[in-house]
Amino acid sequence: MDEIQKNLLLQVADLHEIPAGAYNIRSNGESAGRRSTEHIEIVPKEDKPGIDIYIKPGTKKESVHIPVIMSQTGIKELVYNDFHIGEDCDVTIIAGCGIHNGGKETSEHSGIHTFYVGKNAKVKYVEKHYGSGEGTGERVMNPETVVNLDEDSYMEMETAQIKGIDSTVRVTKAKLGDRAQFIVKEKLMTHGKQSAETKFYVDLDGDDSSTNVISRSVAKDESQQTFYSQINGNNKCAGHSECDAIIMDKSIVRAIPEITANHVDASLIHEAAIGKIAGEQLIKLMTLGLTEAEAEEQIVNGFLK
Image (cartoon, rainbow, N blue to C red; front, side, top):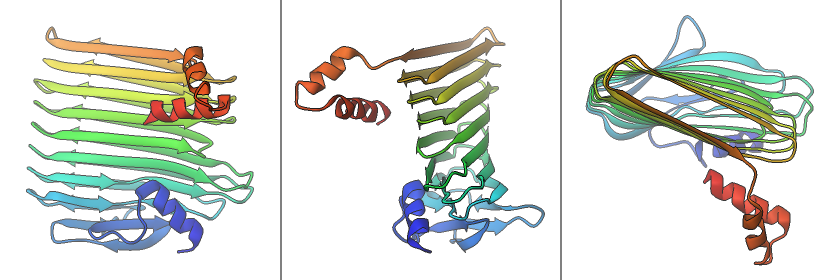
């Protein structure tokens, strides 16, 4: 890998070198390396681009890295990755995509990740998106995550997009079984003329299932953001959706939370707040010697931390 590719890998997967466990690295539309382990098997699909990841029942404290990096302008791809996670597992999956576009053509990565999480399994899924490059071509990412949680399973999903993506539509769909839990933590920042849409659809089908969807975002310059969440309480369940956004300059932020109770014992809450940085916060930091721009940066970093 060249220095650009190494930097992309560092940004989206925190990797300085090849990881010790199972991994699949995709670079410029092709496989750049793959390794399975005793408990985690990675198999390339035969009918379409992508991989199947099989994690054996009872696998504990293991991880798998599946980053995608693109450094050639004009590449457009759609990849399908399926995760088959056995019962009673406790694993971490680190994904993410980095695009460096130094040319005039649009570079685009779309990925559909489907999770089948077995009974009593626990999964932490981390997905980071990052863009760089001085070219005029756009950097586009459209990830879709489909989650199927069996009874007594747990999945925590952390997503972050802080820099460099011109356009994104992020879609997450989840169906929960009895006593399953689905936690989502999203961090997003847009600037320039960037646009970002995030859409969450959660069906709380199981008895005592629960979800908590939390989004923190900052919109700068003339960028636009739309947050949409739909939680359907189809059984005795608990659901919470929260969107907090800081709006700056001439940006536009939309928050559209929707909750539907289809069962008398469904307990659902939604919250949405959009506002600018409070003047007293800026003044307080500026009295400590920071410029207004430095004070804004400190507040934004703290908000997204």
